[in-house]
Image (cartoon, rainbow, N blue to C red; front, side, top):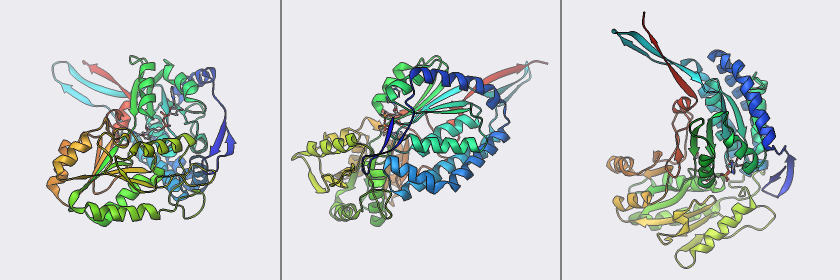
Length: 453
Ligand code: NAD
């Protein structure tokens, strides 16, 4: 299977296309490896994860150029993602020894205690937009709790994941504790989802594929975590710090060429500051340097695929006369999948830009009169991944936290997800939480022991 650079559509590598049978055999190997890996002490697992993080940090530049070449993001973003993956490894390495059960004293029968154990072989199926970070979010908590893992890379971005797996193996992870599976989702991914030996499956990707996977698994045997799409609102109140909010909207929307699950995808700005805010936003969007992410100084790369580029064209065409394109609105010339940073002012309330997930650099902007209106617009979505509110008013922030149905709420920022915070969505954005201590429970089963002397 070819790996293509989206900045020029040239082939940069080749990977194995896993068949159903190969996936089946791989799960068998990981099942055998489970006894050895789950038998390792937490301290040994911790050492391996710390060592792997050190290797990843040392290899940052090399891994970042692989990520940029196969995914398109600018080198500095790729480097930060690689460091983010190392930070997740370090977080889970640092808490390995704290995983424990509870003691429940009762005089009438003695006492009971609970013992936490790993599940067995766990599956991880990931997308192409943040392959290094999302791999770390899934693989680290699964491994640190003693599970073995089969990771299905996105077909577009297998090389970064292979590079990170190599770091884990070089750090001492047994070869039968982790397997990286490359190939098609409908073949290799589906084979993982259908395999009854997989005890937990963590999927990140689109709502459609997530729904398909939920129907494929046997819920009696396989636990499921779904991290799906989002259409995150950003609410800018009249008293917001204008400089910070403009910068937050630019990075929140155009970071990773707009291809981030929790990117700013709907912008709501208070009527009282809308003209000034929008004119500054427009200047910021138009000044972004767009091009091959491998070239120093680029601020936005190409869309990861030609189909992503077509999606942006279709979204912008759908605006018609029901909104005003005030920046961008077209592709850039040349062989890559480049689209200009685009702003659409006042689209109609039922516009596809507001009801669907726009996975690229196109931002709809709506004005609001009061906070109630903004909160209603924010909640008017099938998604519930993230939201940000920009204000100095504690009451307004409190109101948003209480009333917006969303997995994560940022106040005066958007998109930062440090390793210790739980992350996941409500509504169509998913089931379960990743990251932080919350992720550990998904990879553990509890045995209750009742001891009567
Ligand atoms: P996708 O659903 O097309 O693919 C995701 C993964 O599923 C890939 O590895 C793919 O090969 C595999 N797959 C495809 N069909 C399959 C099938 N029938 N059975 C099993 N596996 C299958 O998603 P994508 O285009 O790679 O990623 C973009 C989506 O991911 C966006 O919707 C984005 O919001 C979402 N996302 C969510 C989060 C989050 O944490 N909530 C993070 C990043 C991306």
